[in-house]
Image (tube, rainbow, N blue to C red):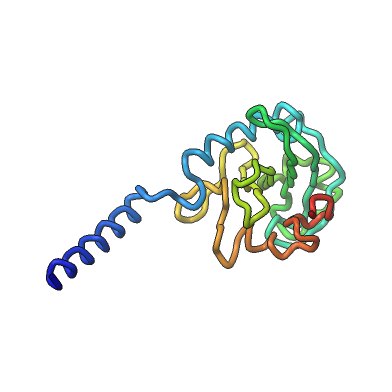
Length: 185
């Protein structure tokens, strides 16, 4: 009996390793469902002029990393996939540390690095993290990826010591939002 148990444990460990290395286990983020939702989110943002060449541009302001040195932030409600919810869109600018607010205001397309988004998903999506869906897009609307080629959409870096969720869990007000506490409960 001990011998059979030993082989079952070894086989189980090899199977788990095989599934983990082949991607058969659900990814913590960037999985097909996250990617499909992120595509719908981008289309809704473009329709609402939050992204794209004809997008709205609020006054940029200086920030600290990781979002570049200058950002524009917009928030409100937006409908994605038939459901209206809170969206926060942050356009991240500054290719060098010496980029100025004035340069970005005059020519935002020249300095845009990425667009990071928080969208409030349905209750139960990720209760530990206030049901936020996270996404990081490149200026052309494609999804940014981490060094492991995982698309940065969904529950990005959930459980990690660094990343979207880890950083925003420190925001005051308990709503994971730094710019205000309107969404604190």
